[in-house]
Length: 74
View 1 (cartoon, one colour):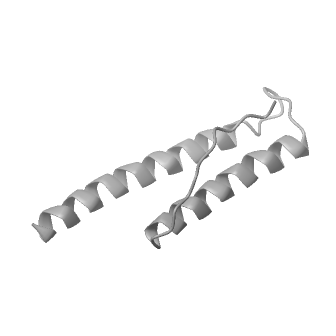
View 2: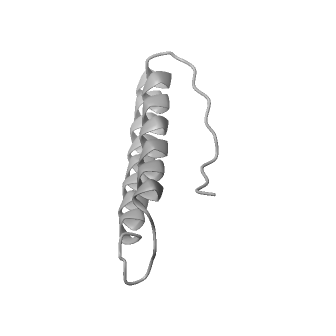
C-alpha cells in the first residue's frame, strides 16, 4: 500500500508541478510591453502573492497550516 501511495504522490506531484511551471512561463508572457501595460507595483504584488503561496505550500509539507486568498490587482 505504501508503494501505491508513493506512486500516486509522484504521479500527481509531477503533474501539478509541471502545470505550475507552465503557468509561470505563461505569466512571463505578460511582460511583453507591446501587448500589456503594467507598473512595477503590479509586478511586485504578483510575485509577492506567488512567493506567499509557495511559503504556505511548504509549510503544509512541514505539518503546518496555511490559509490562501484569491489574488487581485485591483
